[in-house]
Image (tube, rainbow, N blue to C red; front, side, top):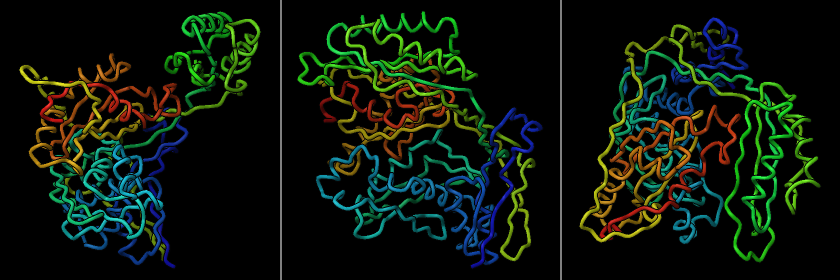
Length: 473
């Protein structure tokens, strides 16, 4: 079995030279043509270092159809196909905000099937799945993955830049969604590099507050912990609490809330014994009903993810063929100084003179959210699978794209009040993509947020109440 491998992504030996500091890892995101060249030379298996998620789809497609690096539209279509299937069942109903409608149809009675991409010579694609597997391939399930963890309206990759506003979706048959019209442009002059550093040490403890006066109980234990930690204060102390307990709850758990204290420090010392002892020693000297969800653990190290860029000349993209020979993959001839788009800010939505109702945003809006390093990505789009007519869908899209502004996002997500927010319209997909800069701090490994990867952010936003013209309901 001929096996080839692709290398050149590992830049850690040159971390200091390239300005990456004390990096634990430093890997450039390589493109698809190393994979394609290995397949062209007869390899049946190709092992790669760091490549983009979509490259493992674009490479075989480029090999099968004989594409060159200048075939931007075809490459962009394949990159979008790769983006759709890169997270497996998220394109076939997994983690989908419209899961209840699929469940009512019995589509989750068997395990969810993985998506397949049938990529044509022009880069157009049909997303489907194996017959007899669970889940579904619909315009909405495909849209859910299209808006996942993107940034602007231009999707940058090492081989091509795809224009997300050019994508067209069509349900051509059950479990078959066609993706057409994708336009491509030259890829950027630089390559993205994933750098991971040791950020320090972290620890946390959860206090259980039960019954009456939970606010006062929380205030008291915060004051006690702060005073006790004062001799060896951690660099960062973050407190967070779940919602208020139910009134007259019929279970003790329902009458309780959790108060979490998370601490971070460059050294293990301040988040070790001084922190854990402070919590344990309060057990008989604090609020009534004092208990914790578990004993305080030992501190653990955490990493920090730092995205960087390097000129392509810093990377030697090399194929090691099955016959022992090597081949350097040249850079594309056409490159651009591409960067993310500056978002257009839509006008405020006027509702004057109309009958309106307050309803959850998710009444007819789907969402998918996730993390891009320390930033949170939130895709919102109008449900299309069960909408009654194109005119209603288009009217709802116009309403949503006008409603979602940076100011509205700050209202819906109060913890983003002081953060930079970008809103990018994707009217062809029926919605917008929102980027909340810095919501996740320095990334998932160091975040003290309740939902450190923003996976539930979209569902929270869908539950928020908004004012909607009755004619859209």
